[in-house]
Image 1 (tube, one colour):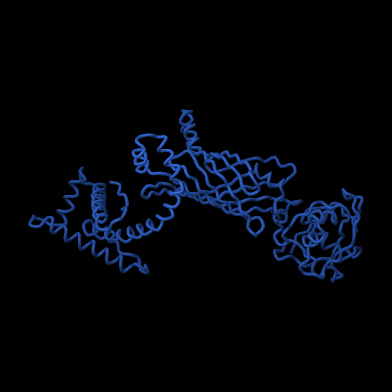
Image 2 (image 1 turned 60 degrees about the vertical axis):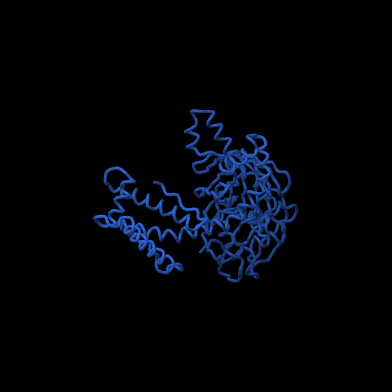
Length: 456
């Protein structure tokens, strides 16, 4: 049941034009016959602001007082689907509902010069942002969430992939003085110059608070870190058919080891009225903007830099020109190499069971057998069994004719490579040494396999 509250002083019915700021007269508008009708639909039909229409009729924007007027003046009794407000459906059809002295099943439409209309969704109360409200978002409360960076390296290319969700919101009050910015553990500044309606030049930099504190003692280090984090990009925005949604592509550079910046993002912006949900005395309009962004930074690996500088005869200027010419090649090569990287990872995932089967035959523990239901379970099981069999064969061949268990002698030999007194840590180091040896052998047997790096 909608919550109601009687106003301290009841508004006149019909409305008194003298109380309206623009002194507008009115015309009657019957309601109640159309179940989809509401203040929002009528305001849109009459090119009015919905909140202005409500205030003209009832001299308030308080949701609970509006419910009281709808019941007492208009004769409304059916609730909306969320139970927070009354609808016009069936208004005036029950004589026992409301004040019997009031004219039921009617509201009053102001005539004259109306305020600018807003395209408001009748179900959610949301609407597009005006230019002023978009400007207000520039000084707003910001929120941001970011997944850890995923570095990658293949051949002549190194880089990282970043995924973040960020946005901002501001309470649209005429007296709004809240200008706070939050970005997790990062502080950022940005400048954007609009070149056209859908193209902009952006310069931005952000640093982690920990880095600022750590490098504050050395202005030179701090300036160097700030330059490294500075990006210059061109952003092209494409509007989507859905109201308030868009996608954008960015390309540019930064002063770092991965200087090429490529980003893609999807954005949504809308204005919502939280007043009915918060039980406020008036509307609480909130402008909200949210963006999901995926970015890739790529650049030349140290190996490629050495080869380019060597080809240029040590001339750094000529080497720099060569790198600029290679920028399109980096992008194409990255797309081409993606499939190769995926296939390499699949080989590693399979051969890891061989390595586990081999090491478990000597050290015990996880045999590497896959989980039931794995579509590659048969292949992984075969590899784990082959690893265990090869471990036994190698031990017998390496230590044939020696006194003692061949497997025990194999482990003791690995212990000599690890060095140090017996301990659980030494046992783990022996296993890692064996894994490193096995992966080198597998890389020779299955080229071009790029094996995982084992930290000894």
